[in-house]
Image (tube, rainbow, N blue to C red; front, side, top):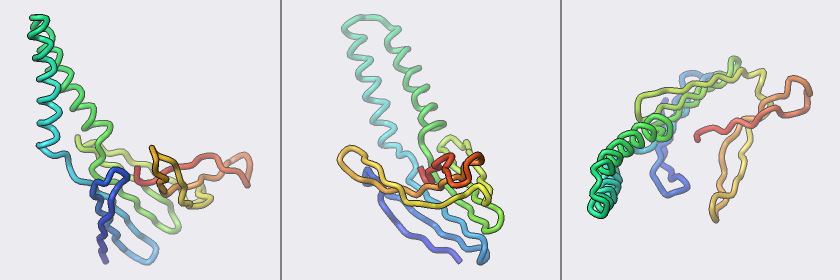
Length: 158
């Protein structure tokens, strides 16, 4: 069974949440955001290169243009590989644990598995971002030393 709903993020961007039920004890949630658009990529590239060309006309040093090209390429690669997440998946298996997978725009995937025995609770946490209060889902992990304590708060769907 598959179910899809649309939401918006804190900046107003569109998000799609898919819920897949493989069995009564196995659920998967997949949160997807739109891919990077050619329009935004072109706008950023043109802005950097026009600023570099303006500096070039003032200084008449061709190193500025070369540096602008390298900064644009490195910045784009860094953004696609470390920042821009295409979709995040949360796989919950009742008796086994929780697997969180983040897929970046560059194709890189990051997977984290939390055993069900380590999970103390699942809570909705709140934070203040600019002038808004935002709510996000978190997993509280048990502290191995103190049985009633919390060792870590793990946010889901970054």
